[in-house]
Image 1 (spheres, helix red, strand yellow):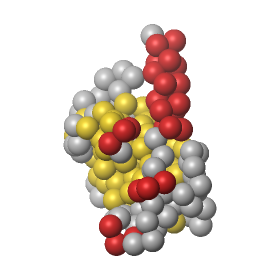
Image 2 (cartoon, one colour; image 1 turned 180 degrees about the horizontal axis):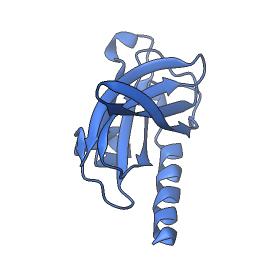
Image 3 (cartoon, rainbow, N blue to C red; image 1 turned 135 degrees about the vertical axis):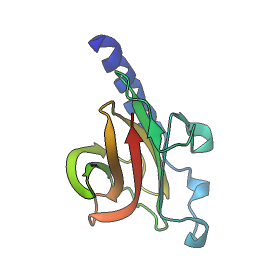
Image 4 (cartoon, one colour; image 1 turned 45 degrees about the horizontal axis):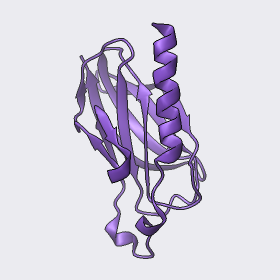
Length: 143
């Protein structure tokens, strides 16, 4: 089971390296982009979207949560960190941070995933590592 999990994780990481924003998506008119973090059960890298968009997940072994971070400003090649915080009675505490290298030096959108199966209420925060800029947050639940 560990070997299959590592295979899935390796495939997802390779996909994240290929899932950067296309050059023609970058524009000098940043009004077409917003600061937004979407979560889902799958990914469509060619369309730059998550599929099965949701904030409620079923916690199973090797469960992956897919994400799409859109920044109003060009990411300019910055790595992205997805910080996971647990919500306990309205108080959030960091439980995990996932770093993701950016596969290109331009663009407003990045896609990837992280493994999560522990039940509870959480908040995911997308952070541009360069400048430590918080782009967007999204609350989610794992059942």
